[in-house]
Image 1 (cartoon, rainbow, N blue to C red):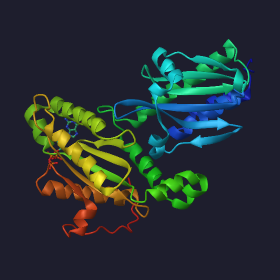
Image 2 (image 1 turned 45 degrees about the vertical axis):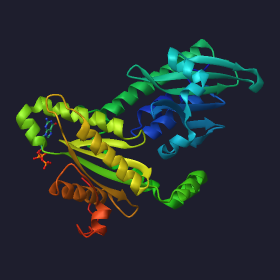
Image 3 (image 1 turned 120 degrees about the horizontal axis):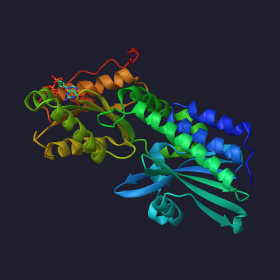
Image 4 (image 1 turned 90 degrees about the vertical axis):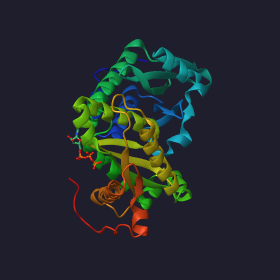
Length: 354
Ligand SMILES: Nc1nc2c(ncn2[C@@H]2O[C@H](COP(=O)(O)OP(=O)(O)OP(=O)(O)O)[C@@H](O)[C@H]2O)c(=O)[nH]1
């Protein structure tokens, strides 16, 4: 099967990919663009991630019969992911880093699997099911579109990440938090994805949490060892964050020695133990030359009625309490209010963040 290279859908798909600034929409544009350009039966984007030391693959976007049939929410990733080792075709594509073709006579279709790389490593797969075999020229067009997607993803990545630690930067925080707040609207979720809303109602104790982390006495570290060692501490702390939190949690460097975590939905007790585990991991880690470093952490629940200013203010107040009361500790805003140790903030505030 040969593609019509002057096809307006090819240009349209390139334009659609490069005009996106949101990762989810970018993924949809890629899948939709390829689906329309090559008139596939269906096109699916699978992502690769690590969970509990195991590589897992999960489908994020699929186009079939001219419409998007699947768009995963990151919080249901674990239910839908499957181990890479259970899927020989994905394993082979991952190992060789080369596109694979399978003829499926029983389904009267041809299946193509393309690896998608980020900085040399395979981080996703594009699966195309087509009624006919694609010729070499068509496959080159697909590879070209994937290269444009990867290049664009790298530009997006660069603008979203802190250059020193590689964590998400402050600029992206508002967007991520607003996405969480939008996701808390039960009526919308029920309309669009009934399965998701059923799952959410089952997990009504599962809430989103925001934690604000600040290194204790960081000024002393800079003063005693110099800024280069200070920077090294920030880098190692970011690594400890990646090791301590899960794939679905969003990790930000807010600038200076302040970090923020948006935890994927879980119960209070779990959020507390995750934050506590991180605090301990830092306390037990030996920072070269510097030795022992500790962090203080304040966290709060993200509620529908909140705006970013309120949520951040609450977590920051719990952090301030931790700093004033010994440092190297984790404090929950809600528990501090409950115990009367701090006063509840006015959550009706309308101040706009930034
Ligand atoms: N090395 C390095 N230092 C930074 C960076 N950004 C901010 N700092 C330093 O971080 C320190 C923050 O100090 P303070 O806000 O006084 O707080 P602290 O010493 O950590 O004390 P507590 O937070 O009260 O425990 C200052 O010395 C800043 O110069 C950075 O990117 N690299």
